[in-house]
Length: 591
Image (cartoon, rainbow, N blue to C red; front, side):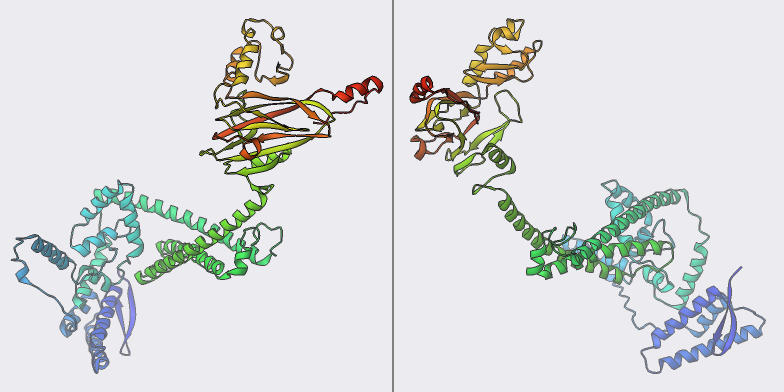
């Protein structure tokens, strides 16, 4: 059963089979193409059409109710094929006798062989012998080779990180499918003649009844699964890109609609780009336009591909595909320098903000250093060539979270002096702290009526006097049944060493081995300054490596100090005499 249609040829109506009509239409189009540029060409084609109409009339008078493809073939053979204007079929028979006696001749032979195989052909996807998209069959037609070879190579390269699949997908996107008989002939390198067109139409009808073998069926299933996976991934990518486009659109509308100083999250001020928009708005405009192009082009391409697979729209031509790819590359090349400029500007803005928010007494420092200084009410007197101003991780009892004063310079050039002022009553005081140093030249000082210095012992970060004193105080503890017997308050876990109470964390009567980590010491020692005479109302104390202040050169890479404690040890001499005559009113001590 064949589909039959009615055509009007030179004012006459004829019943003709659909395949015969298709052959006749291509024949007439080839005639117009051949004679179109010559003078009187249209009249020649009209005369041929009139002659065909007369022959159709004769066939109808002979009792043929419908024109078949065999009738059309006979008429074409009777009228004759149009001469082709370009018949550049070069047949160099001398190449066959060419002897490959050198590398150049061998290379020339390979080139000639490839050229001979591909001469006069155009690369298309072959719809008549396809398993997924017809790419490999099209390559086989173009190179005059067996498609099985290309399919085996694709499977082989797919085993190497999916290279074969990627190449196949790229070619399936770029190469157009041979849909018309002319394209099918161009794919095979045949001249577009009525006879060849008739053969194509017949082969097209026969290909619908082609039964694939087992190997082709298995390979088709594998490629269809892979292609379906690619379609699924492409759909997901399209959804993600569309969401990204919507988000970018919301950000753009918010940035351009709401005022700079609003509380909306997507305004130019919040993104740090308000100043850039005022000074150089073209960067932002190009960036936004390029970003939209980079998002919309893939979305359009993927949606168009999915619609073409469902036969709802025609596939893109190769020129259109190349144009979209080039446009996407232009958008990419535009967005890269704009992004670099925006990132550089944002970095400069953040640097300014960081300097503005991380300055403590005219010195730049990080959040931890600044918080420690501010909460401890420390005043920076000098800070030169210091890598940092506080540290943590090597407190004497192993507590990694305890922060302390600390500085570092690998070349022993740090000049670091920090102090704080404490209100006191007139009297005699003692300053205690724990400190450590990598080398000589760092001091603890106290200023009452006079400046008093105490050097920080240099044990590095191993041992130290504090560890030795703790070991001495606890030497009998391991053999004792009670902590109270060796001077440790069992309720508070405190031990008193030279008037300073140290809390021994994680100490338990049944787990005394935890004291071993306390005894590492980390180089800490107790540093004390006695007999600090204060006749005023305050004491200033701190640490210093400044040779101009201490009178000693600093030759250490680092030092640390913490746990400052000021203790009143006595009264001034004139205050003792006053006590016998006037009882002293007690005041609350302030540290």
